[in-house]
Image 1: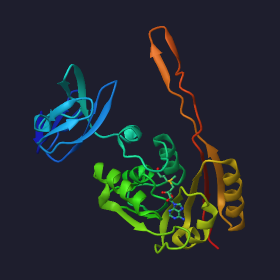
Image 2: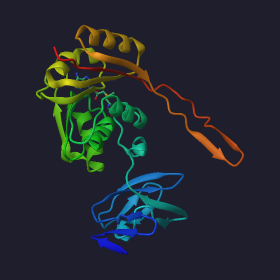
Image 3: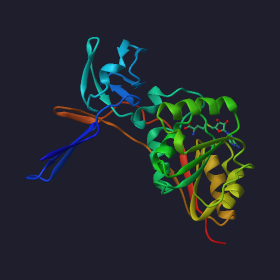
Image 4: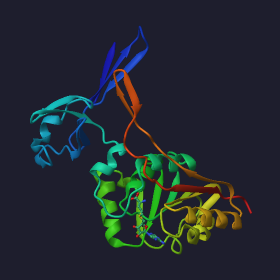
Length: 275
Ligand SMILES: C[S@@+](CC[C@H](N)C(=O)[O-])C[C@H]1O[C@@H](n2cnc3c(N)ncnc32)[C@H](O)[C@@H]1O
């Protein structure tokens, strides 16, 4: 037995209880052209466009194809897949230094951010963390992002819009240490040089039980943020450093990748207590 819903095909196998969904690409979708060698983000608007390293691509040919399907472009085989934030550093416009996708996922986890939550963010930068937070809060939530520099917010907006995530986003030019208007928010996340200066705003904006998190590159900032969290009676304070080490898997030769672990920065989190 199977049913077809709009452009998405759902097959229900009664014998095995397996449900397979083949979601079809529609005009207006953002997709990734993925190959083991390169990744390109493009909008399927039905027009032809020049894609870096691939030449001219007719996006009209992708309409009605299934996500995950293969296409031959030039001499290479690509897959048409949904845009993944794992690849965001490769396709996003770059301004200020971004939070890496793995760190963004830890930030979301450390603050228990989920669908429908209201979150304040300080420092849009290039918008990498904004896109991850927007994915997490979904269309029922809201992300209020404060940024001092118009140019940075312009880059962040381009990146947020390239992933169609603008619906829940309220970007503001302003200082997250002074100008935050929201109250009753679930989380308050900053990636700015002096996160401790934002703590009085975080205390005003957060629900009791809500999380504050600062992403910082140096140990000195970790210590100072930690001490200010103690002074302001935050509880459940935790500082962490996160690494991701990929594995190379070949037959008879499975080992860690040679890529250096590098330096990612630290997360310092605390929970607002009821006074
Ligand atoms: C390192 S970047 C943020 C990068 C961002 N998290 C990302 O993943 O793309 C820091 C940003 O914070 C902004 N900034 C610094 N102090 C700020 C403040 N007090 N209020 C708002 N934005 C601030 C800077 O202009 C800069 O764009």
